[in-house]
Image (cartoon, rainbow, N blue to C red; front, side):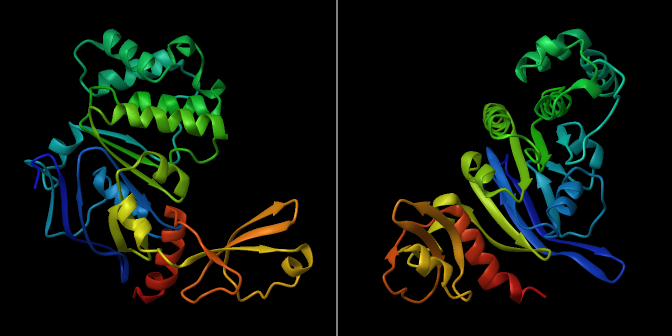
Length: 291
């Protein structure tokens, strides 16, 4: 076990009688770790706990030698970008970052703000007001404020929601670059983001971890359960609704569909599983068993 790993054992979170998180146990290695699950799975609750914003019950929670029981020690090495991020709308990018740097106790404010602006490719927008930023620029500003002080742990919640495809790719590449110097935890329901940048993943549903592992390990759980079938337009229109279609693609000859099934599909050819296939299969077979 690496001294730099994050270790979580038997974490539980209650809201009154409702158990939002149940017996969460994870070991998160340096790099980028993905929390994947549908809306309402408990991802944001877990993220807010890790960001020291929510109390919870647990047997153990630590990052190397640092312990969540000492929240201040975690906050000193933490950068956090929540899903709904808005602040200082009438301030310029530069002024807002300077303010945050002062609040964080940064020793050389001007130098640190400049470093962060260049790191997220916002140096040319430093005089622009926050309210004038595009969605992609606002997410980059969110990362800029999160990395002030060179945090060793960066937590981002639904970072690419609302971004166009080009901005999503830029943002993923930025997180990849930042992971050289920090452990990053990303929470999202967008499978493509997880598959593009994460080394390990945990799939959550209804407050529990259903499965965790590397992406190749997770993909193997859906082996021999993904089928590809070619159908004419008439066959496609009359396809039984009981068939669980993952994706349909229109071709010159009709449609090519991908199906998820434990049973052999007539005229079907087995296809290589993706992380999305594993996600759908895991939610289908394990999610309903969560109490």
